Length: 122
Image 1 (cartoon, rainbow, N blue to C red):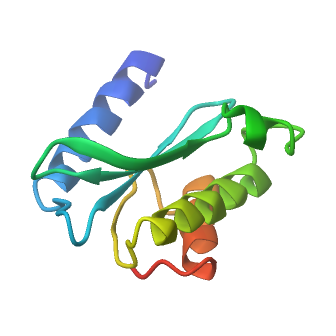
Image 2: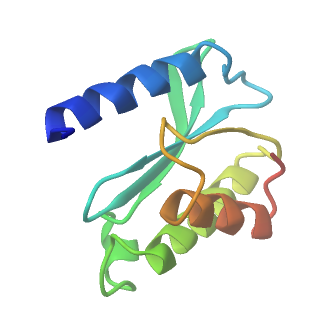
């Protein structure tokens, strides 16, 4: 039986394997997605400078008031759209998607679809 700590360790190892090949630049930042049981977080990261350019999460007051619950596919889709709008305002059109060791399914996929629909190119 896999315990919760084993699962977390496996996810961390998977994330490190993915991060060896994915690096964000100033022209094409990394779109990192993190999901907890109750909330979704997404941010654009420039790995060359080590800075976060744009971020969005279901904990932001403006977003939280629009959503009933932050841990579902609808909320994830909205986070993707809002992040893309902020990125386009900053002149960012292309990104590299970092799923953070999670399966490209459900909420992680919804963030990507929301960002694509709002204008980001992966």
